[in-house]
Each structure stands twice: as C-alpha cells, then as structure tokens.
Amino acid sequence: MTMAKLFPTQEIGSLAKPAWLVKGVRGERPTPEDLAELDRWAARLAIPGTEELRALLTAEGERSEADRERIRDWGALFAIRFLEAAGLDVVYDGEARRVEMYEYPVRRIEGFRFYGHVRSFDNRYYRKAAVVDRVRLREPFHVDELRFVRQHARRPVKIPITGPYTLADWSFNEYYLQQLEDIPDLRARNYEAKRRFTLDLAREVIRPTLLALEAAGATWIQIDEPAAATHPEEVPILVEAFNAAVDGVRAKKSIHICYSDYRLLYPHLLDMTVDHLALEFKNTGDYDIVRLFKAFGDRREIGLGVVDVHSDVIETPEEIRDKVLQAARTLEAPERIWVNPDCGLRTRTWDVAFTKLQHMVAGAELARQAVGAAA
Image 1: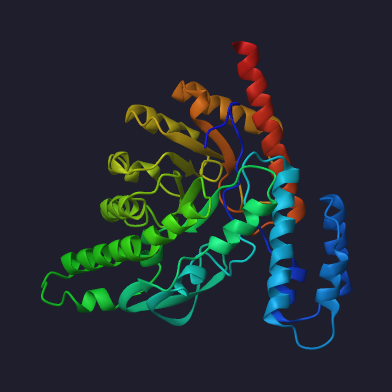
Image 2 (image 1 turned 90 degrees about the vertical axis):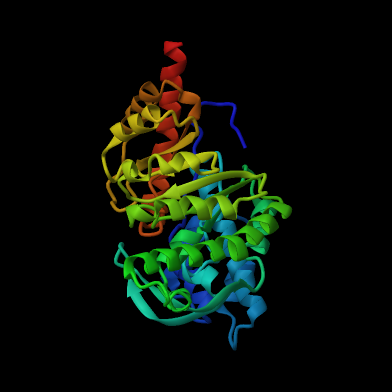
C-alpha cells in the first residue's frame, strides 16, 4: 500500500475502550454518564442509529453472546469513525474487540496455561501464561474482525497483530526448556529454547494467521514487537522468526517496535523481510536516531512517532511539522516517511487522543506544504 502524498498518517495501535463498551461486554448496565458519553461521541462522529445500541445496553435480563457481539460491532464502528474523523489516512478499529495484545492471541493457541496477572510497563496488568506443550494454532484469529473493518471503513485499512517474539518473551518457557535438558550450559539452553519457542509460534501460529488475513483482504499487516530490543543478544531470533512468519505473505508488512534503543537492532534488522519500520521517537526525544537508517543504507519506509502516548500534553502542529521535516532532511527521502503516534493511545481519554491525532494530521499537512514550497 503506497500513498501518493508525502507524509501520510496512520494509526499505530489500540484506543481506550469506552465504559459503555466494557460494561456492555461484561453484561453490566451502563450509568447515565456512560450513556451521555456515548451520545456525545455518536453526535461528534456522525454515527446514526445508536438507538439500537442503547437498547442493547439498557435491556433487562441476561445478555446473550449475540448481544455482546453486536455491542462489540458498535465499539469497532465508533473507533473506525473516530480515527477517520481525526483525519488519518490509514485506519483500523483501535483493537476494540481485543482484551489485550498478549492474552487475546494466546487464548487461541494450544499449548499455553495461564498462571495469573502481572503488571506491564504502563502500570496496566495482563494475564501471563506458560507454554506447557508444543504450540499449535486452534484457528486463525482476527479474520472476522478484519472483515468487519473492511466492510465499514472509508479509508485504507492496516491490521495489527502481535508478533511471535513478543508472545514468546512475555511467556514462561517451560515446555521448550524441558526438551533441551541435555544442553549443560544454561545460557545456551535458554537461548535455544527461546529460539525454538519463537520459531514454532512464527511457523505454526502467526504465519497461517497472516495468510488467512491476506485471503480475507488484508493489504497491509503490522506486526507488533514491543519486546524486540529487550534482550539485544536475541535480535537474531526476532529477525529469523519475523521472516518465518511472513514467508509467502504478499501484503505490505510493517513492524512496530515500542520504546527501545534502536541501535541494538542493527545490523541484524537489515536481514528482516519487512517494508516499513514504525518506531517511537517522541517518547525518547531522539530524532537523530534517523541517522542510523541512513548510515546503514536502510531504504525501507519509516513510521515516525511524533505523539507521546504516555502524556496528556498536546503536541502542536508546528512541533510535529518540525520533527517531520527534520527527519526528511536527514534521510533525504521524504517519500519514505509516514507520520504516526509512538504507540497505541489506549491510556489516553478519547478527548485527548482525538486532539493529539488532529494535531498530528495538521502537522503532517504543514510539513507537506513546507516541502512543496521549498521544491
């Protein structure tokens, strides 16, 4: 997927789930304040027919699974219209149906056992699992989700999916370590067990899911690997697994890597079969890292993170313009730059997230105008 204009804008991850959506899926009744928020955003996003949604949310009695799925459909539709109204060129549904980027796929993979909750970097919690048998895909996931988004989106679509390295890194590795007890060196055993676990996830789980998504119409797939640089010595595993996962996939492929020292990924990242690197820059403040890509001759697209997803401070369009132009001057290839938030905006309110995205879109337009005026 390519864009004719310079500095196109994209979403990069999840949005916060409205209270009415969370409570509706849980079978709880929304408060009057929840319903008022629903009405406010329905009006702001020009979403008609929400009387059906209100009836679902306020009906007496047990809520059926079909009712819950309809509520999820509404949540996805609100998120799609939210991202479109903010002005983004490429959208998805803010991962409205997903519990969390780790638990959601793991629940659809054989070989895992959940042990309990652990705290993640952003002070949220997720249920961590151990791999207790060789992993095997139950059935490809996100396929119906993608079909719904493609049916309703008015802009091009990019679907995100959690990558094999992160799924392995965030799990307890029991089964694969047990298979390698004959390796006496603990460091070597841990490395090889991690490699086998990650490659099995790539080949047996992620690759068939990617192929199913492509068959369902995906033209751009974003593989999320927030754990990519957690263990620098394992970057070769990251690259090998990514390439195994995308083998035979013709859709545009991008990797999103959260807060990291991206220097640790090179030169190994040059061997990755990927079209687009979406990275955090605003949170680090280190836009000079763009020089790294020029130094290594990396000619792939760059998703330039210009919005801090961990702060309510609203970046100005002018600030965003300047960062985009700085990167364009460094790369000497403005056509390779996409503009995006650092990561998903799920920890921000919809009001804050919407304004941040609007300013990002405006900043990209200012940068576009500046390049046009200088040409």
